[in-house]
Amino acid sequence: MKLTAKEQERLTVFTAAEVARRRKERGVPLNHPEAVAYISDWCIERGRDGQSVAEIRSGASKLLGREDVMDGVPEMIDMIQVEPVFPDGTKLVTVHDPIRSDSVGSADDETTESEAATNGGDSAGTDE
Image (cartoon, one colour):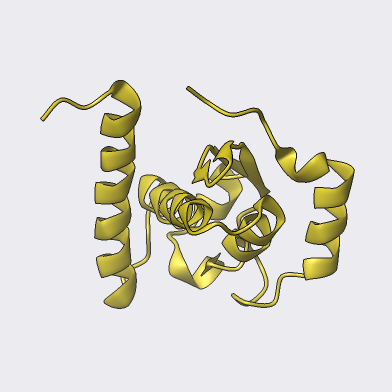
């Protein structure tokens, strides 16, 4: 099997995300690479499913709370950028402050959607 550099990177993210999912299920706080992989993999899969950039950005900011990660991790991750493959090509998804200080699931969707409108959905052109 021959994989491109991008495919190898995707498999690395998936593997780290799988480790993170297992640890999260056991209640083990995630470290920096695990948290980034967990959120990145989720975004990549939602893009593949056809969700919009705004939907992915909004959902990604609700995945992890401070209680899910080790001390100091939220401050280390001010932004995550990932390029999922959508049905119409590859687009850049930027998630600001992906680990919120409030409870998981209560990030304000209105701000996220207005940011999406302002930023034009963070769409980049299609990739190769």
